[in-house]
Image (cartoon, rainbow, N blue to C red; front, side, top):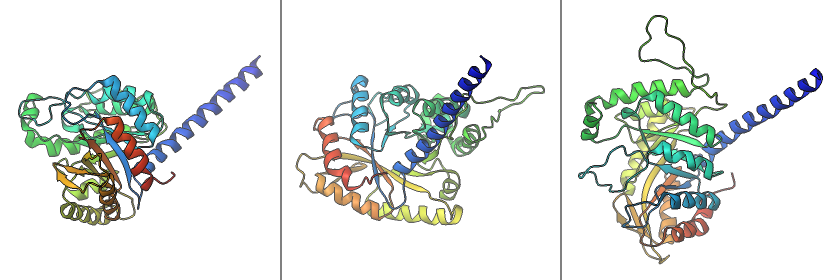
Length: 337
């Protein structure tokens, strides 16, 4: 009886170890599929809405997320918009990112899930660490934690913070978060009275959660290059973006010369139904037919961009746009990895 129990226990441990190792490999492969040297991958930003729509049907969003996963997009990005106001230009009611990421983790299989970006300065870093670990576990290592600082002083005031504290808050919260999500995990308490216990972050994960700077967070590019997987930024006109990338590469050479550091762009896209329509600049992106879009993306890849996520803004049905991108654009950039 004891021998049988020992065999069962050994078999269970072997399966658990295989699962852990598999998750480690899968997590690293997920990051590589999104950010790889000399390659460009494409993702989508949720919610995926037709132009002029400001109320999202989130059952539909989950269905669109599954479609994006099935069609080979490399990442789904979710935003963190704690509060809306009349002077904030985004009228969409966004779900809390952690609430949305839970079902996304269980409704998709292969696509990376990324936050673009959790407002690091207005959330406690240990709460962020717990949530990020949870999403990473539910998604089997497919989560990339993008972190920003927010840029609206009135929102800081609503949370009892001073906006001029954001640079220091970003750095200190990043350090606490990175320690909690690292291997081994270290929980750094804000206060440790005499006799306080040593805390742990559980459940234990086989892999660490990659941290990505979205925007600058008030930090220098050298700081970002030292601490982050890469730098995700908004679309800019080509000359400005090339200058920004050159600044980034110089910072990487100074701060992390032996490491790969990614560069990504969030782009608004109004994909025309006419595949031959020339590109026209719009706020934070382009209106273009697919041939012009492919040309733009070719230039971005040649200029060093590793990932582009599309914020769709077309008047066409969203499913139609996703299907055209998947069949006509993705094969030009997504190698088998």
